[in-house]
Amino acid sequence: MRVLVLGADGYLGWATCMYFSRLGHEVTGVDNYWRRRVSREIGPGPLIPTPRLSERARRWEALTGKKIGIHIGDITDFGFLLSIFRQHMPDAVVHYAEQPSAVFSMMSRERAAFTVRNNLIGTLNIIWAVRETVPSCHIIKLGTMGEYGTPNIDIEEGWLDVEHNGRRDRFLFPRQAGSLYHTTKIQDTDLLWFYVRTWGLRVTDLMQGPVYGIMTDEAGIDIRLLPNFNYDEIFGTVLNRFVVQAVSGFPLTIYGSGGQVRGYLNIMDSI
Image 1 (tube, rainbow, N blue to C red):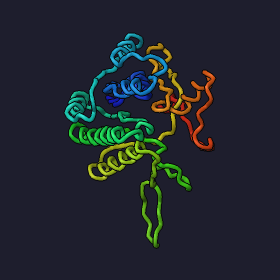
Image 2: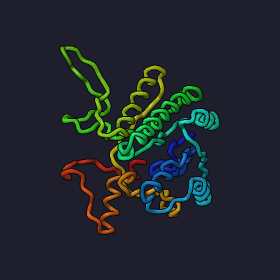
Image 3: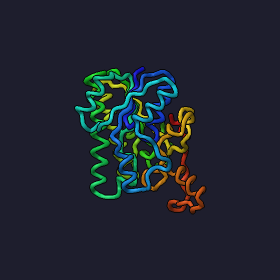
Image 4: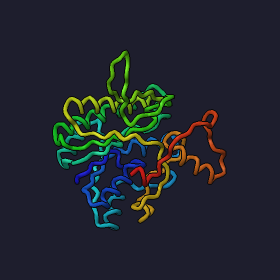
């Protein structure tokens, strides 16, 4: 298959590119390096220096003989994204290309506005690019369990049967996010579900918990192939932060009473 990975420079994006490439698929990665740049401007940056995508793709090809195509650009630029779709005509597109930090989205009005523009316009552009080029393309959008908040009932697998005043219907499970970032992820779902109903698009909205780890089967070939590993409070996932704090002897930064229970997902299982 032809697989397009958006947000290919990210923690999960590059690992996904290598995984599908190893399986024999034709993989193209797209990124604008926003997170790489901003994580260094407002935080310590990744723990391990990571080469840029083109260099990593060259190293991957040298070691495996398999190519990963790379394009640098912003998916909120519809002309750019449409040209990528027309060039590669993907069978599937994996959508990681969002501002991924709840903390960042809550830091200021400007960062909140960026989060809304980047995440929602990016998702809308993907929908229209698929519609105009390959309507059968399968969109895999990475959602998050954080979209649901903490309801006091069991979370159904996407759908909930509701009975009210003697009438029954089936709805997407209601979600009440705890940050603006997670709210934009809910709005992604609403956009995609609207166009699934309207145009019959093929979409998987994958809700996953916090991911941890750095080593995958593919990254183990060469340290220069490792994914970005952020460990700060803005872009680092919580278990990765805890590991770095434990190794360095820094007290773990517990949130609130420390009583939250969450499911954690190893990066290999996430991929």
